[in-house]
Length: 343
Image 1 (cartoon, helix red, strand yellow):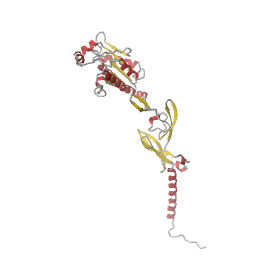
Image 2 (cartoon, helix red, strand yellow; image 1 turned 120 degrees about the vertical axis):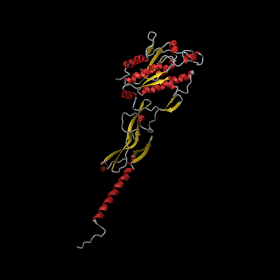
Image 3 (spheres, rainbow, N blue to C red; image 1 turned 180 degrees about the vertical axis):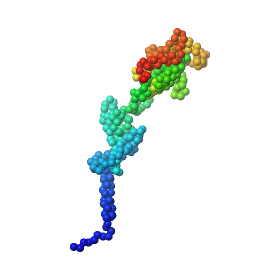
Image 4 (cartoon, helix red, strand yellow; image 1 turned 30 degrees about the horizontal axis):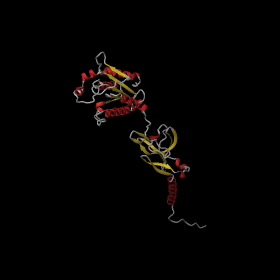
């Protein structure tokens, strides 16, 4: 039998190349089909999050399970949102995490694309909301359409980190009663015990935050309100905030107390008589007020309403004033007894 010899262009190398091309074409076909399963969506500030298209939701080929590598699709604040995987050069896949949102006291399930499965994460810790669930809008004062954004790191976590309880020590009294001196001595004493404090002094605040306010009645009320709100933020941060202001009216002081949880507002009344404060007159203000150069000065032509239920009242000791350090020790003893200083 006569055998026809193969053409001269056919060789073992050609056969190998032919087989390799067939394999490449097969792999390319699989990649194209699988890539159609994914859609890229933008959520919040993350623009590289991929979502699976349900119409292409078929089973993975067995070879796709080899050599899995997880890659972040979006990185925000040090956390990866939208975990994806690759096998060789396979397309990206995103993870959709189901979350339960508490809206108006009613739990509703909704999908948040691209969030890791942190079960303890609050609803709005991840950027973006699905169309099925919307945050509750509020109107506060002159502000409309605002939403409270809750974070998973709360006051108790910061207090544990600082090993102390955040609170506000509100020091009130006449000008010259020793409020600022007590605040500084108290801050030094707590600092020596490794506690974090911050002082909000009335005059210091008028150098910046409250520089636009005068000493008219309405501005003095706003001065106290702003200070109370800032003090509240410090307490929420876990800091022991020492607010030192004349704050002559009970109404404004009580409003600041109402901003905080029960027990976190500690009122310290510097119970020093007017004649003692006027004799000291460290800033020369009483002299100017008596001369009529300052109008509406507390204790002279404007009233001071002493607290009725202060947590701490610091009196004169037999006509003599204790040193600021001695007075600070009294406050520190109270804080220690009430558990604000975790050792």
